[in-house]
Image (cartoon, rainbow, N blue to C red; front, side, top):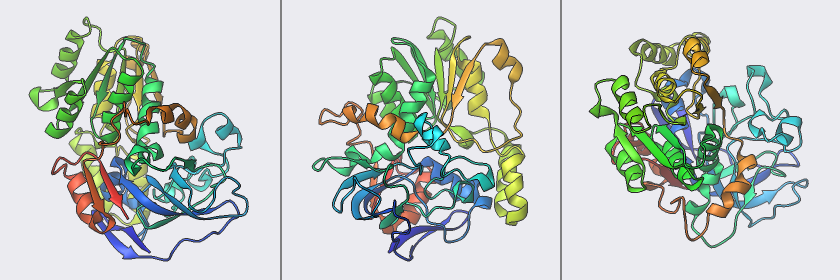
Length: 396
C-alpha cells in the first residue's frame, strides 16, 4: 500500500509499504477514506525528530471502511463505516473506566514512561504505524472504532478522531460558566474548533488570538472577537486590550491551543533545532529535558486569565525543565487542566452535534482536500501557513 513516511527533518515521502494484517484477535483492518494532517504532525516534521525512525508511517486522524475484523471484535463487520480515535485504548482497565483513555493501562508505553499508545506518533508513544495511508491496522478494535452512519460526507465525522474531542475537552476543562468569557490562544484547527465548541456550550463571549490573517478571518466570520498579535508591540498590550473588554479582570478561562509552536524564546528554538540534527542518543535527551518548549503562549495565558480563573492547555508541550511562574499561579489562585483528549469519553456528547444543521461547521471545516500522493507538498504548505491552509484532509 501507499503511506506517508517520515525520513528526516522536513522530509516526508509517499512510499510503498507492506499492507497491514490482523495480528491479534482484537484487531481490525480499515480501508481509509479520509485522514487528517494535524498540527501535532508538524512537531514530528521538525521538533520531535530525535524520537522518530526513518520509515515511520505518520498520521493519527482516520476514518474508513472495515475490511476485516478479528474473531474477538464482535461489533464490527466488513463494510462498517468507522472513525478511529487517535489513541489506542482497551476500554476495560481502571483508566479507561475512569474516562481517561489516553492513560490506558493496557497500552501504556511504560518503557518510555508515557501514557497510551498513539497512532503514528514517535517511539515515545509506541511507534505504531499511522493513518496517513491506504489501510490501517487498528489494535483493540473491540473498543476503539466509532461506527457512524452512511450518507453524509466523511467531513461530517472524521474530526471525531481528534479535532472535535480535543477541542471539546479543552472547553470542558476550561469550565467556562454559561454566559462567561473565554480567550483562545491560537486559531489553528484545534483553537478554531474550540471557539465553536465554546459558543455551542453557552459561552457569552469568545476571544480568539492569532497572527495568521486567514485564521483570524475564519474565526471572525463565526462571531469570535479576534485579536491579531501583529497589532500589538508585546503580549502585555494584548492582555490589557482583552482585559478592557472584561471589566478589567480578564477572561474567566483561557485555552492555550498553541503549545510548543509558540513564537517565544529564541534560545529555546535554538535548542529545538540543535536536537533535531544531533545523533538520536544525544538529541533525544536534549529535546526531552532541556527547555525544548517556547512558553510564550502559556505565559500569556497565565497573565491574561482572571484571578480564580481556569487555564486549559491543549497545545502540545514536551519539555521537562522549563521554568513555571509558580508564584503567579499560586497568587492568582489559578486552576489548570491539560492532557491528550480522551476520545471515547466525549464522543457520545459530540455526536448529537454532527447533524445536517451542522452547528459546529464541520462540513466545510477543511480548507484543503488533497490526494495522499501530495502529502509532501501539504506538509510544507501547512508548516509554512501558506495558501490559507488551516485544515488539510488527505483522501487515500
